[in-house]
Image (cartoon, rainbow, N blue to C red; front, side, top):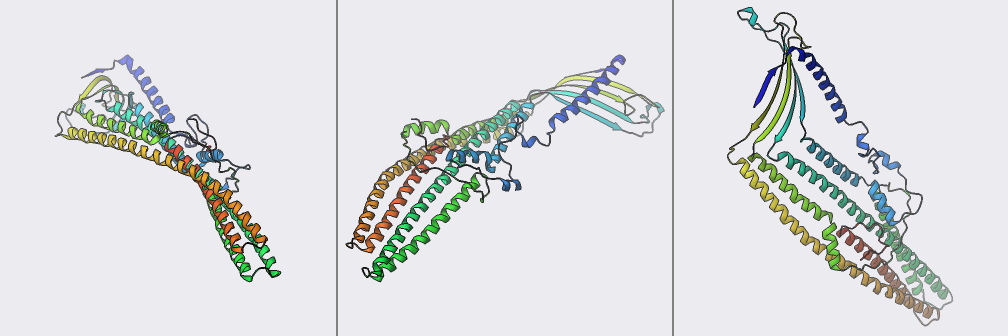
Length: 482
């Protein structure tokens, strides 16, 4: 349905003004749409992004001038790590896609300008085309009235995708928190192992001096001295390995924090035991409520449903309304000059409906294909829920296991320390052997290492459990509420 009418002579001057205003609006719209050079470096509110951009300038970054705790290390990684910056950019990109899909609901303003020249021999001469050519300027405003719910489904899908990407950013932050905490605890464990190894080396060197003194006065054989020297050499080799492990962990921790590997950073903390009092039911309840991957899986089902709605939109007709104004002339400024000159203006308003009634099953089978995709997403969501239950229980068991090991290892350190003191006293009183002292020192080192390992494993398992529950806990030294 359409209505056309020619513009009367008094309205043609008004039409020229309208066309000029429309052209000005088009220029302004283009200026608003094009981003400024610094747009990508700023947040939507105009503030600079907190994440440090990747590139050669990152090498110039320096570490903080104060000791860094675990919570501070997690915060630095969330601000500086480039992988999170990439995920944040994806989230913002999806948000702009949502806004773009929302814009499809509004009307469209379009303009065209056409110039053409024809040569034709005809009789009588009055039927010949204009000598200067034909020029046309048109402005059209169109509005989609009904699209079979395609516009609505497209916008809803974009909105769900934007929400999913925001949740994916939160998941990436939780994963980064776990990585930083694991490496932070690994660094603290390496520091304590290095300290224990230094103490063991100091004990062995003292034992070597004592043994050498006894040998010098003829109270001990040369074999005892040789055994003590071998143990000292082995302890020095193990200390070198422990220091290398510590330095490697330190470099990895700097990398996660977005710092150069050569940055001098002092990390402070201790492997303390923090009770965890939640039971399995409480952990599962928190996980089902907070885990980002479960939320993303639920949104994936919604996205698949919107895809099915898009496929079903072809069942319905498409209705568009439009209004256009066209002005023709035989000069570029649309005026009437020369032979065969003319000037004309027409406005038109109407509506158009299109409907693909039959497409040989294309829409039907596309609808069924999308429906099976919805079913697949629902099965994957249910499977993920089952996996989450196992994940929570296994990590909670790991926490309980490490907690029990701490108690056993703590008692073992006390016993090993007492055994070493007794062996050393017996050796000094000439009633014990050098082998007893060296063996007691070795067992004390193993007991200390077991205690350090149990504490680090407990906190690492606790960090993994918090992440598995979808709970952000940058500081593991504070007890979580029940």
